[in-house]
Amino acid sequence: MTRCYNFCAGPASLPEPVLETARDELLDWHGRGLSLMEMSHRSPEVMGVAQRAEQTLRELLGVSQDYAVLFLQGGASTQFSAVPLNLLGEHRRADYVNTGQWSKKAIAEGRRYGDINVVASSEDTRFSTIPPRDTWQLGADAAYLHYTPNETIGGVEFFWTPQVDAPLVADMSSTLLSRPIGVDDFGVIYAGAQKNIGPAGLTLVIVRRDLLGRAHALCPAMLNWQIAADNDSMYNTPPTFALYLSGLVFDWLQEGGGLAAMEACNRRKAQKLYAAIDHSDFYANPVELASRSLMNIPFTLADPALDQQFLAEAERAGLLNLKGHRSVGGMRASIYNAVSEAAVDALIAFMRDFEQHRG
Image (cartoon, rainbow, N blue to C red; front, side, top):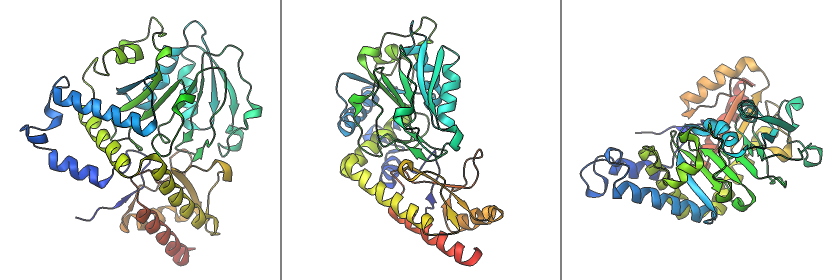
């Protein structure tokens, strides 16, 4: 069987060793005579898988016991509601930074529950920049500040952590596990799994414990972080198989040298691809140099009429899911952790060949 190279923004590539382990254990997990996905979530086996996954994740990220680690459902988009429901309290005000489509969705959802102050926005640059910190108009009594460190659609990324007085909340769906971060700088980190964590269906929330117990009285139990923490993420049946696969990804990362080694690899991949784009008159990337994402690289062709031909030929070459998001068009290569350097090299070679023959 020949596997193609997958550049999808999510669900994204998973490491082949993880898939091979899951394949080998699919029907008979550790001699138990059934698949792990068939076991009770309260069985010692599944509880052990969850505990091991949490411990390995804590080691990878340096997460102290001052933080609860929650394995939830609903994707990062559900946390757009969970964040204000858990944190606004009587403040009813929060600060948000708008750097792209996912920031906008979080802002729109936040406005259902309170007064949302957009402290800065790069919409006037078509989300191709990060607003300089000295331009932000922070609120005096904000319950928290929310931002999106990596905008998957636009391909902009923060390489600095905002310093603010209010608890910092980050949608790290495309950033988490791609490089080391200082967890202690944040009040809340949340992420959909389907980028660098594992398969779709699992959502990770890392929340400082002193921020628990503040949920609004109308907050649904399934969105209440305190309830999730009190029940070790098993208030209801969690996505057990997605949690199992994510634990295998954490092991793979640890065995590969951890997040510092992963960042070095990711930077090599991104630098290669950006160089191929920048050294060409046929391809272009719209993002300012200092804000270019390591994970999501959008690019356009000089002649948009060639877009469909590019995608069709790329697919025949085994390079899949390069179509840009419908809101911006063009192309996008998402080069998450499990996308190999060989995949990026193959994409660059294809791009050069396409330019020579079609440009």
